[in-house]
Length: 156
Image 1 (cartoon, rainbow, N blue to C red):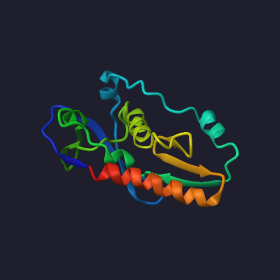
Image 2 (cartoon, rainbow, N blue to C red):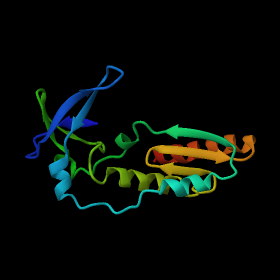
Image 3 (cartoon, rainbow, N blue to C red):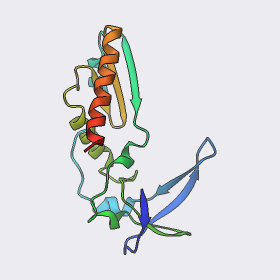
Image 4 (cartoon, helix red, strand yellow):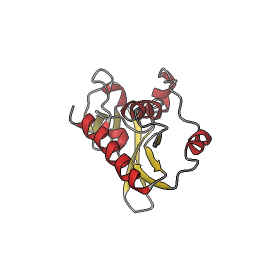
C-alpha cells in the first residue's frame, strides 16, 4: 500500500487513536488537493437511492472496508502522495483516503463494475453496496451475481 519514497513532495502525517485502541494513519493532503483538478463524477443522491428500495423487503449489505486501497495510483502520480514520518519518507501505491477525487473515482469504478445490476437489485454509495429484492430466494442469486462481478475484476 505504501513504499519508501524520494519524492520532493511531503504532506504532513500523524497517527490518530481510534475508539478500538488501534491507530489510523492520517495524511493531510490539503495543499495537494488545492492544486488537484477536481473529479466531477457525481455521487448518488441518497433520497434517490432510498426511492429505489420501495417495495423491497429483503436486503443485504456489503461494506468494502479497504476498497479505496484496492485502486492503484498511476505510477506517474505516486510521488504526489508522499508523506513524512519519524520512520522515513513514504508514498502510496494504492489510493489513500483524503485525496479530493478519491470518493468520486471509487464511485465511478463501483458503478462500472456493477453496471448491469444497478437500480435493478443493487445500489452503491461509495464503498457501501446494498443488494435488495422482494422474494428472499432471489437475494441469494443477486448476491452471488455481485460476487461474480468482483471475481471477474480481481482475476484480470
